[in-house]
Image 1 (cartoon, rainbow, N blue to C red):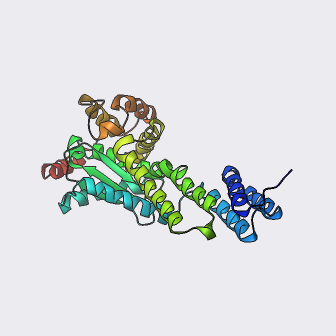
Image 2 (cartoon, rainbow, N blue to C red):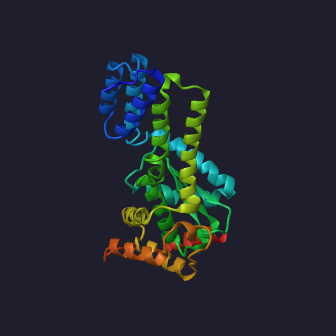
Length: 304
């Protein structure tokens, strides 16, 4: 069989082969590079570049580091604040943060790179957001829909659960990030110039867009929402709040639900569908709402 020995063409062919096989095993990338080097299709520097890139693509299927998760979430959080103004009353924000941090300690991810943060958004839209890395936002409209502190806690627990289950990261883990490293495999690390660097920068920027699109427009998958609701019930129970508050909040939300409505209605399944998931996760002995917390809640809501 005739072997094409033109180095530029041969390198592209071997790199393309690595792109196909590297997602299953970095060792195969090393084998492919060795074959290319042995046949003269690529030189030793090109082979080393393919081996290193293969290793990096393989690692892209593992979890992001806590630092990476935080900075991705910070960038997404900045997008949220570009769209919604912050509510600047310190007492109300402190109240939400206090509830949120109690819930965090009862979650399965109580510790993050920079901890959790909670911020009220000064908007009547009914909505809430959780970005990777622990940034949680809730609108005044969402807070005012709640009837008591336990229902407010239920909303926050749902958002904490999205972070606990890494739902935001999952929207980019197997697409944009992998595409960036695949692009590196095609160009080769040592021959990458300004154009290739710019391309990779754009791809990583698009990864932030992926998460933002999920929060604002597309929403999480039905299975992710079910997972977040089930986890929220467990978080509420461990924190001493009534898990049934999530069910009563969804019932309240269902009364004015519009399938094509704004905000939360665009990005979440109908409350009626979610109620079935919550009911399945509840126990017969789940506690009722504590009225002492309700009085505290009413004081804060009255000041909004």
